[in-house]
Image (cartoon, rainbow, N blue to C red):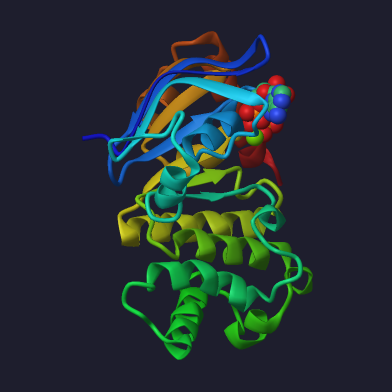
Length: 266
Ligand SMILES: Nc1ncnc2c1ncn2[C@@H]1O[C@H](COP(=O)(O)OP(=O)(O)OP(=O)(O)O)[C@@H](O)[C@H]1O
Ligand SMILES: [Mg+2]
C-alpha cells in the first residue's frame, strides 16, 4: 500500500486553479523529488498534504496518508497525522522555530509528545533531546540548547528544525527547499544529513526543489511540475537520461551546461 496517495488534486484560490489534477504516490521508504520553477505549485502541494493550507485556498480531489483521507479532514485528524506520519522542513528554518523559546525546549516539545505514553520524566526527555541534537550533528549541544534561534547560525537553525521534524520518526519527511537559504558548503552538509537520517530511520522523503542537480542527488524518482500540472514522472536515471517533456529537457540541459561550466572552471 502507498504511504501517500494523491489523486486528482486541484488547489484553487477563488476561480484560479494553482495546482491542477495532480496525481502521485509515495511508497514507504521511497525518496521522491518534486521539481519545478518558482510558482509551479510545489509548496501548495506540500501544504495540502500536511493540511496546512491557508483558509482562503480550497483543495479538491483525494489525498490519503496511511489510508486516512486528508482533504476535508477535521483538525483533530490532521494533528494526529502530523509528526508521526508526516513532518515538514521549510526553506527558512525560522518558520518552524519560536523566536522567544530556547532551542532545547523547542526540540523537547515533539519528544514530549512522542514519549507521553511511556511517561518519560523531564530528565529522560532532556537526555533524548541531547541525543537528537547529536544525531543532527549540532556542535556544543549544551550551549545550543540554551540559545535562542537568533544566537545560532542559519545552518544550525536548520539542523534544529530537522531535529524537530524527525523527533517523532515520521513515515514521510517533506523537505520544501531545505537548503536554498544556505551557503553552498552548508547546503552540502545538510543534504548529507538528510540522506543519512532518511536511510537510518527508513523514512520516505518528498524533496522539493527548483534545483535539479540538488534533487537528483537525494531521490530515486522525480516528479516535474509546471504551472500546477505534472508534466513528467519517472526514475531519476530515466528522466535525466531521456527527458520526454520540453520543459524537463530544458531543465536537464541547463543542469548539464552548469556541470560543464564547473568542469571547465580553473
Ligand atoms: N495564499 C495564496 N493565495 C493565492 N495564491 C497563492 C497563495 N499561495 C500561493 N499562491 C500562488 O500559487 C502558485 C503556486 O505557489 P507555490 O508557493 O506553491 O509555488 P512554488 O512552486 O512553491 O514556488 P517557489 O519555488 O517560489 O517556492 C503561485 O502562483 C502563487 O503565487
Ligand atoms: Mg515554494
